[in-house]
Length: 570
Image (cartoon, rainbow, N blue to C red; front, side, top):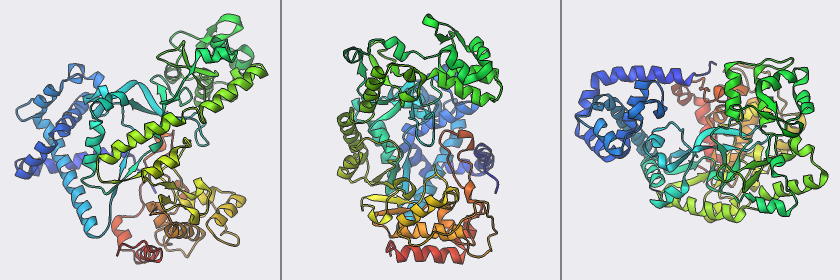
């Protein structure tokens, strides 16, 4: 099963769409229905159309590379993108495309509604820094900072999503009109909305614009540690605690006999026998760019391993200075005890710093997070009649369950994450077998040890030993009942029967409930790989939708699952 190259697919689609536009576009553009659509949606459609035209004209979406056209007023955008404007004809293709997308999605939504089926949309936590919204309304974003996530069991160095953070104070001044307009528009098509990373409405992991990893961040909003608080604890040497801790013996431990090569290229001698990064090489981005331009291969290390080791060295400190007030406000580096800076402190300072860290990442900001979330989520709920569903996985403040419960927002329950019996899930929740960030159920099961399988089998309410599984097993669509099908069917059936108000089963897992539709290689069915952009969003279904719809075994299985769980709408 070949993976899809999304950019290539998009290019081919636009090539075909432009051929259609050449033959029928003029007739559509002259229709009264299109005229009404353009008039109603002009506030976002015209900037979008012009953005696409300029992006293609200059070959990139970074408006800072467009010269004077990258800095247009709202009036100038409207003039260029309206009838008679110099870019109007080029914009019309994008207007035409959005018109058809609107009609098709609206038709699908109405068709589903007539069948008793509600559609759920998706609200990403952030947008690309080179998106049309940022170009038109840069005042709503802080482009000097980026959003991401701290280290976790999946990503040792955290995640840098490279998304600009919102300027919530600026948004509040006009009543959050950007958010309200966004949800109002989505409400035309959807009855419910999955709020991606709803934790970001409580607090968001914020990184400097020159970051590469997620190590140098801190939560926002949060209460920083003040210089006076450090002094009161006797942690007087703030320079020592916030400066990268690089010493000759540590270099040798990281890079072996090639440590001198690393020192010569990136470092210079600092005070008290320490090393500091050379001017122009003192940020993660500068170091990553330098290694990309001139890869460094050391004994036993490839360029990627060298880069990771250099970035770890760049983040070896106990405290991170606030960029806006570097001498007065500080944040503990996440898991500071994993740094050499911490390891070579005296035990008294270690104890105090560990306490500061634990307080900072546990209770210190709870009231602030709760107040922030209640205010922001009320804006989202008040903007439409859609039911909100919170994707609430990840390190969460302890106030999360209460806030979601008070707002009647169900959160996700995934067996492999909660490690709870599915029968104990609350009604105000959405049970899911997996997400786009995970292996399918069959792929995940293949990766487990025997002990882990026994544990999860019990949590599903099953007795006896779970089915054995050969992770290398492959099969054709017509082979007899197999372990992958048995396991996935059990997972799906238990989730459909659990008390959660909704059960969400990804297509991969639904297909894996039948021999005739099951994946040949379930370990390859993950869609998104956090922190690994080059591998992400390339999965494609091996079966045509027509083949799935006409597969009698699959349709019968799905019908039986829905009716036996009392989740049927009719």
